[in-house]
Image 1: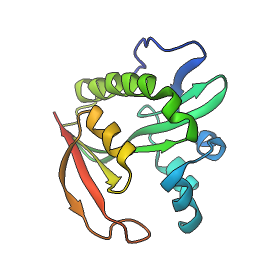
Image 2: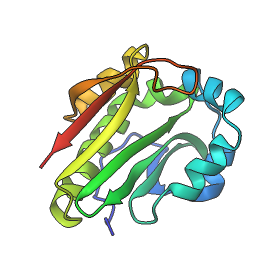
Image 3: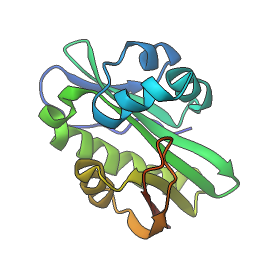
Length: 158
């Protein structure tokens, strides 16, 4: 279980352990909002598969900005996930800073040798966010999205 590091965040910002109710309360943006419309039970799936101790929520003035975490695929391998709200761009620096620290701790304390993430190839901000966290493109997953869109498979290796 990852202990949240001491983070220097702006006033009103905080990172807390993820709760399933956070997935229901977050206002989604962009592709996540679209996916919710075409994938039955999208939020419930995220809440059900979020792993305690490896999932967090970013909050600003009591409003959920982002939910994110890592699911274990099998020993040593994890899959990163993220649910952004429309206000995530207003808190991008804090989210990146906190995520970098958390991912560094994941590789130190949780015995992960690999964490991967699938990123919609049309989502430039998600791609830049993954790159900022040290993820590198391994390939393109053609027709991977629920609507047949292409995704990048990106990974961070210990």
